[in-house]
Each structure stands twice: as C-alpha cells, then as structure tokens.
Image (cartoon, rainbow, N blue to C red):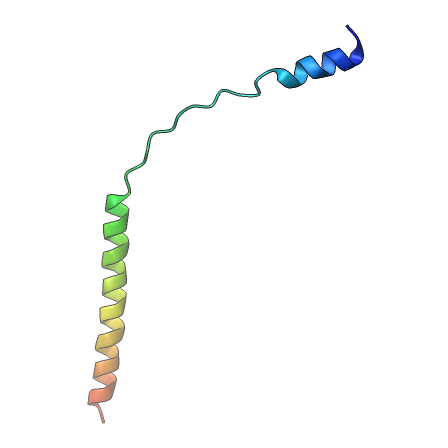
Amino acid sequence: MSVIEKKQSANTAPKHKVKKEEEVKLNGTLVSVMLLGLFIVLSWGGIYLWYLSRF
C-alpha cells in the first residue's frame, strides 16, 4: 500500500458510534419556569401597586 492509500483507508473508518438519544421530557421544567416567572411578575406588580398607594 502506498502512503495515499493508507491515508484514505484511515479516513473511511468510522470515528465513533452514534447512539440514538432518548427524548428528554421537560414538562416539569416548563412548569417550574412558568411558576417562577409568575412569582416574579406578581412580586413586581405588588411592589409597584404598593408604591403607588403611598401617594
């Protein structure tokens, strides 16, 4: 084998096996983020209304 043939045969070998990954269910994450966002919005709204009520 020549040097070129060796390089070509080395390039055709699979580098790694690709595993089919399972889908990750993120429903709990979505609910957690939505609840946290709701808490932040309600907190800001409550503080803003409290600020306005002082005048």
